[in-house]
Image 1 (cartoon, rainbow, N blue to C red):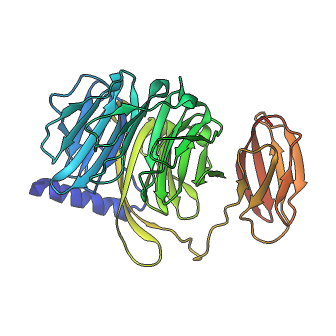
Image 2 (cartoon, rainbow, N blue to C red; image 1 turned 135 degrees about the vertical axis):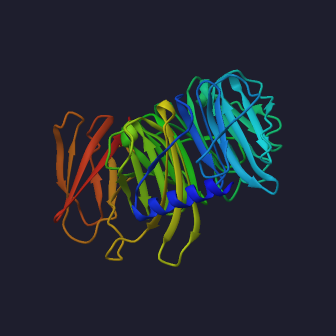
Image 3 (tube, rainbow, N blue to C red; image 1 turned 90 degrees about the vertical axis):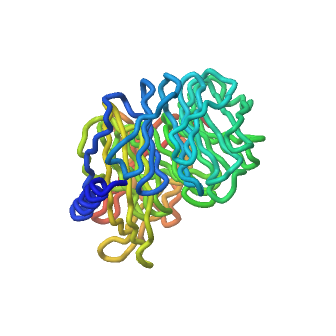
Length: 407
């Protein structure tokens, strides 16, 4: 990186830090729709999108180098990690294309995949990993056992015909992975892809990410976010109804979600917070990394980039503090399990009386009741569907979504 770019990056980062949660609009050099962004550190990254748009950067996104000699297809998924010789990048896209470049050479190799279906996402298990997955249209699931050189199709009957959007691998073991897609489709493997267990949710799902051993998050339409712990899923309150397209975590307690109409959510240790976006364009991908944990107070220096329609590219550098101003955990009541068959409990409330009001999507009140001390609620008489839940405790009001599935 030359002196001019170094100074420009330094000025940009000072500006971002001084403005707290400020996001800066950068130039991507294209008006094509950008579908994905991935960074392995605060300098080296890749963006990819429609019409064979594929570019790399080594200066934090200030300048971008277009890829040469690549297939003329749209690109939708990316994975990048740092190896001893430089960044190693995998890109997945239309017509079953997977290409790779290593060492920062700018040379791209097309890999054999055996499919012509569009691939929406690709992930490998850390640096120098042999295990990886790519997922896409018509229930396509590919696995590599040799670091991406060769890919073979997996037969997963429950995925047949579905659009699979995202895959994530447990950071502690390549045996565990989650895949999500349309119609609330969720499957998990604990044996490296030999067998899969289905755990359906509601709404179309767009992104899944592990943040630590056996724990992570899923996002989808209508602002839906769930956390998962093993095979258990719990509903998170996002505060929005915008469709969410992408998740990325800089650290266990610090993450981002982006989606329709430029929406940006920051996960700050205890809850999701809406951030001010500089754009109203749909954001399709986000990548967040942390550079050093400052001390024991959950402070992180987070670098992040997001991309969207019309070549939109935005970036931020924020000091994220995971404790509220009073130094106390922010109350975050949860509905467990969610979805459910009408039997659930409310967890995470402080001591004291509380009530719950359930309404349908038209706003009609379906049920109201006090929340007992054990938090157990029985609404098994309700029909399958999506409901809005308002929890009131003192001056605090919490809104949650509740999915009830057929019994």
